[in-house]
Length: 74
Image (cartoon, rainbow, N blue to C red; front, top):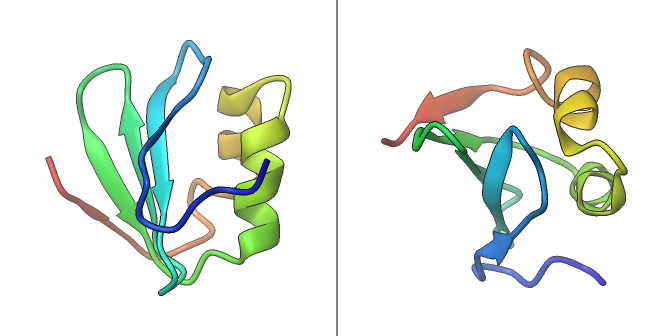
């Protein structure tokens, strides 16, 4: 299943609650803590990998965290 642009998708993860990917290559991640971050210039392939990863937290730490510019939203 490919992420639908601008639709928030709930995820099964101890770290993440939901994700949303836009056509402008921004990835919004809502963490279980309630914090929401927006990551910029994230390739669709990275987002699709996150969506199907067995461990979303491990995938996030390896392929997204500290690799893309980001902004805290909430």
